[in-house]
Image (cartoon, rainbow, N blue to C red; front, side):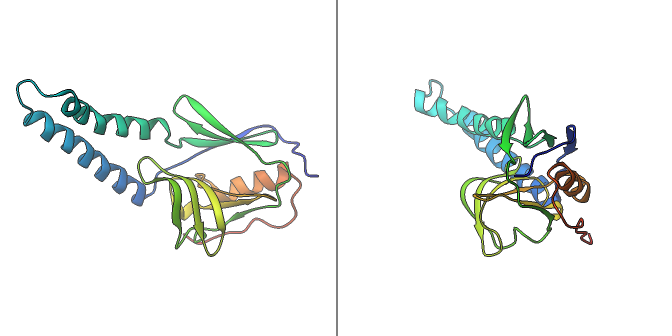
Length: 180
């Protein structure tokens, strides 16, 4: 059984061009809908209309609360850092950590967020099968394979992240490199 033996290491999660464009476009659409509804609201709008005005900004803010800010390797866990909180994922029994930038190509979203502040949730493709993503820039994709699941993250230094995981869990193999 692999057990970690290194202190915690933190990596940021920079946004790629695709995420920046999708989040900006979603923001424009959501706030545009609310602004248009507000500008054309009757003098005494019904409650449902008022809820409609506020629904779009609430969706945007909820997306921001689930944004991925970074990753921290801590003991036998990976912490996905969010604004004010974190998601804890056990890496106990990890089989491999690989920097694989093309790994998510051709993916379909099963459940989750496909571009508002991140690519977060359950996805599936031919290469990885079903996987859980906490991604912000697909050119930095690191695939973590565990016995029962696969996790995809996108740290600022993919090769450094893989090196840290391999060292922490005594995984064999060299650090794969990818041209960017």
